[in-house]
Image 1 (tube, helix red, strand yellow):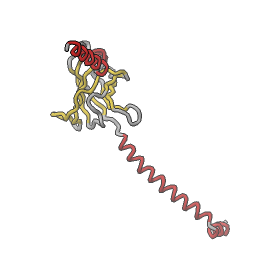
Image 2 (image 1 turned 90 degrees about the horizontal axis):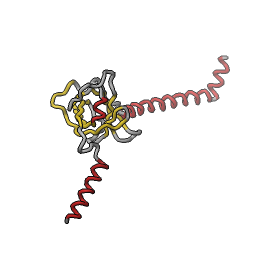
Image 3 (image 1 turned 90 degrees about the vertical axis):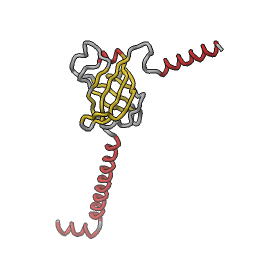
Image 4 (image 1 turned 135 degrees about the vertical axis):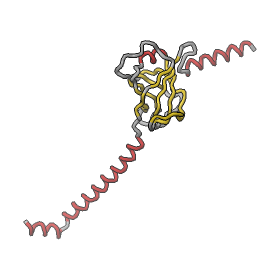
Length: 173
């Protein structure tokens, strides 16, 4: 019984270290921001500062007091090193790993000096992410227009090639 308990405890501890973002003995900080659209962001998604992973998304919910059109609040847990490097005027945006990969939050450092004393929670501004679905939708319209133009050009070129049109052009010149 004791051997099984110790083995299970070690297994859980190893699993926690391999998959957990925060170490249980390390203080973590809360960072919040609001978005109009989370673009498929999920709980557990990475939070990065200048490309370095500093935490994870812990909660995504509708904000009780929306400011303008930013109605979705995202709460993140950030490690001490990351929080000490976040400036008060930093901004958060949602990015994608690869072309169709997972979503994550990229914290863009601001220009102000980092806070002298770390607070347990900090709210920062956000930038609305570009939605690739709308870009792809617009590219479909563009493609339809290009096809229409090429069909029109094809008709014009074929019309010049007809014998009666060649004779008319010859008479005119």
